[in-house]
Image: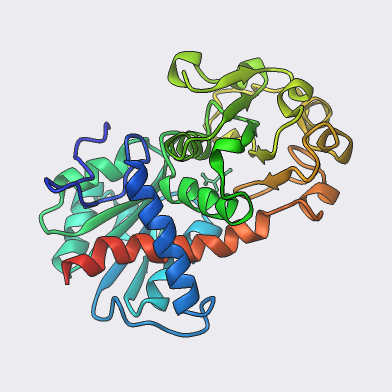
Length: 319
Ligand code: NCD
C-alpha cells in the first residue's frame, strides 16, 4: 500500500498528517508554535480547553502503543473532543472484516479524525485516499515509513533546549533501517536546517545511503557520537526484522549501547533522547536514560502538547 493522497489542500493547508517528507518549514514551525501556545493555555494540561468540543476522534491502533495512543487520547480530550479508542482485538476485524469496511463503518457513525497506527507502510495514506467523508487522517506510525508526530515532538523538545538548529550536530543511533522515527526525525531536522546529521547502525541495520543524501551514515558508534550535541537512541525493531539480524543483546550493547563512557565522547552536555519504549542495557544504559542529560520524559510530555496542536490544526479550522 502506497500513500496515495496529498496531505495538503489546494491552498497548502494541512488536510491530513501522513509524513513530514516535503512538509514546508513554515508548516512545521507553525505546529511547534501552536504546541507551545496550547501548553501555556492548558497550563500543562491542567485546564481543559473546548476548541474541539463536539468533535469525534477515533484511535485505530493495529500495533501496540503506550505513549502515542495515550497522548493522542489525552490531547483530544484536553481540547474537548470525544475519543473512541477502537478495540481491534474485540472488533469484527477478527471475524475477517476488511480494513476499509471497518473504516467506512466507523465513518458512518461520524468521525472527524482517524488516528492510525499500522504495521504496513502506507496504510494511513490508503485510508485517507478512500474516506467518504471529510475526516482527517493522522499517521501514528506506519511500518518503517513515517511517524510524523514523533518527528515533530522531537523537534519541539529539542527546540526548547537548543533553539538554533543551524548549530546542532545530531546523531541518531540504532536500528535505522526499520525506524519510522528516524525517517520522520530526519525530515523534521533537515526542514529546520540542522547543521549535521549522522545516522549510525550496525551494517545489517543501516539504511540505504541513497535514501538519506543529507546524512552521514556510519557503522562505528564511537565515531558517530564524537562531538555531537544530541544523541537520539532507537530500539531494535525486532518485529520488523526477517531473522536475527544482530548478535546477542550484550554484544549489541557493547558496540552500540549508550553508556556513560560513550556519552563522554559527545560534546559537553550532549542531550540524550529516545522515543521509547526503551530497552535498558540494550541500546541505552539505565544511568544515562535516567541521568541529567536525558530528555526522554520531556519528549513524552511534549507528545501531548504537539498532538493537541496537530488535532487543533486539522480539526478546528474546519469549524
Ligand atoms: C516508536 C514507534 O512505535 O515507532 N515508539 C513511539 O511511538 N514512541 C518507536 C519504537 O517502537 O521503538
